[in-house]
Picture 1 (cartoon, rainbow, N blue to C red):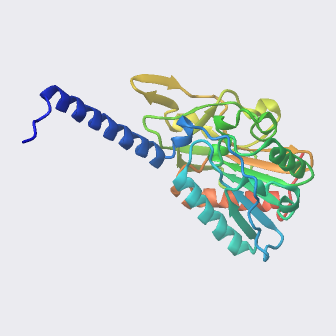
Picture 2 (tube, rainbow, N blue to C red):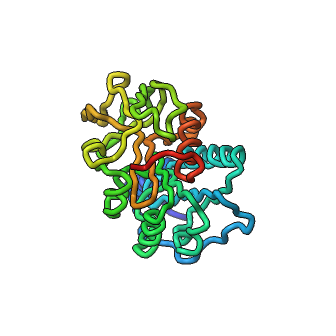
Length: 296
């Protein structure tokens, strides 16, 4: 006849099992929302390049969504669908990958534009970064969407200086997603000339320490900070994220290359917004060189 364990031992075992279960649930939740690599950032880089489709034709768009930091799962899926739809309608080729080894000189020369679709973290090796930099400066095109401008890229100084031009601070919380008014500033630019002077968009709005305007970037659109609550409210604390001059779409010329960053794209729904689809299509056309426009 077996003897029961003492009550205190059973309580300890139950407590430990409960703690382990809660920890597993918490880790699963962190993985599900895409935050795993924020707690455990990856610095692994791909070494074997993916196979490029043989039927790729010019103009061709490389869509890169590697996430060694926060993963915007829904935004990546929505962005892929939107870009694929636009490309089919325009007769452009597309290749979607999360393999950083595609950034080699032989593969990259097959593309006219690269899109960093919510790409985050330490994505590329130093050699891969250098290949991309040389390709862009020689006349390539680049579009960065949402997380491509967050703080996870801070270690890649060339990228921050030439493509983003501003130090990320935080995004709004409480609520996290808000509708705000986007005000066009350079309506004659080829990437935004079809957009209305003002339009509304719901987003997890980012803020930066200072406007990239002060670093010579060409601002295409700004936020009306009176149209939403530019605060981060968390655990009883409140942080003012207002910038005064609050750009959300901007361009820069890097050597002979054309670049455009747009802060929108956290959710799949963002890519269903008519104005954002127009912006994305015309930004692709401009960086591909299909749609002409100056790059001062």
